[in-house]
Length: 319
Image (cartoon, rainbow, N blue to C red; front, side, top):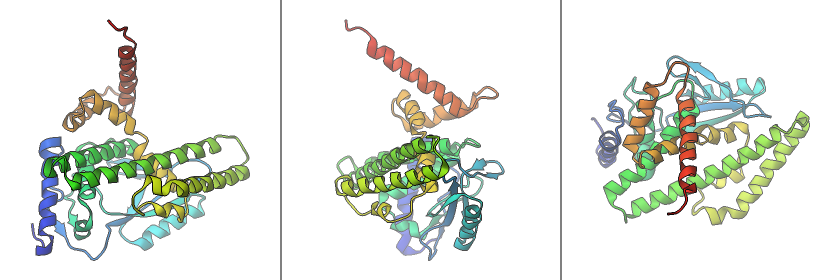
């Protein structure tokens, strides 16, 4: 791998993450993240997503192989903003965000970028393991489930890797646990806001009243967030929520990436909390699906069965 000397330690660290993911977690070795690109940019691309103003209906783009997806990526900001304006003119609320990586699902060799060297250990480990998970298992036409799987594996895998590399009492692991805990807290906050807004959208009120109630709901959420911020977070990482415009496209981002996490967690618990076994089990379930059944359906059935088994265990009389 060609690289500049100042990035040597970063590249060795990312190779250690990659090897851990392949050997200890069973992630597919696509040779991604074995090449390096130096860039003056701090991100890779711009991603546009969109939702209706009075519902969480997503705008979908359709692609070969991967199917329908609720976002589109652009390398040029002007192109992303042009797409956002087109959608807004058609009545959608939009969000344009910067992203640091994409997964080509193993069809191409995805590189490391120089700006990643500024990421803390937890972020780079979680990012690489997340994208490697996409290249290991991908369900066509179900982005929320794909993102839930990759988020779960990326976060749990990052902690396992950091513990393996630095030890259970290391400041690096302690910082990673704090980061993930605060990220999870913010995610729960946004999911709760989404549920509040869903109740507004399902109220049957006239559109004008729905929009007014929506604005009041978001304003009230900001007030709660401001009141508890210093209690919930140890840095300014999430303070932007108090200032930026919040619309359905933004709130729905947290539904897309996190709402199906419980389906993955049930499988993880059923295989004894082993990430390698989790990925193997998900792949085995998908390979054995009868015609017409999806992985989502199979996991929902598995979740109901697991919950029923747990209830039966709890209800057993003491001996």
